[in-house]
Length: 115
Length: 114
Image (cartoon, rainbow over all chains, first blue to last red):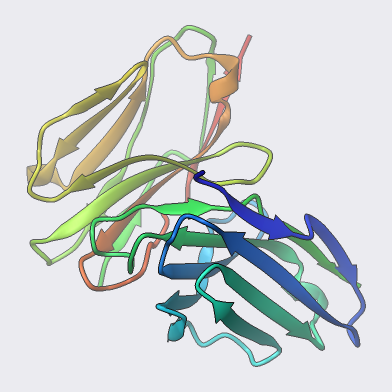
């Protein structure tokens, strides 16, 4: 099973809403990632979790709050977002930290629209 | 710092043609890894290949082949006898050992026309 599952697939939320994106993998991977991808742009790294601890935060605004409840799950809590935060949010996982000769597997993403 | 350039923004070919996607990277490190990913319209990034900087052997996987030239810092991807299902955005991504970051190039949008 080389699957990373993201829910929901689509999400529309208002600027005052609170919502969460979920990501799950059962490959025993110990590193998990959140990427943000705007239309016609490459994915941009947001957060990296390694062994359930946040290891990289790419200066992401605090209205995005990641959480790693266990080694299989990764959440992204959203609050007070802006319309410019509308994008495809991709979750990925890898055997170990990126850079240690290991590829990352990606989910299909959550397409978020902020209205 | 590391940088990757995919100079071809869009490529359009007719089915069965061969097509090469270019990737040039910059790094001062001696140990690094290079990746190619495919992103079809569904949005999921599909892993295609990983190479390390010590292995300059070219690789072939079915209709796909990769040409790694360390001397020119290039890692080009060729699709032979292209098919409509190959239509996607292809990303080249280098990673420096220990950097923990997979940094994507701008991508090349490949359209295969029937």
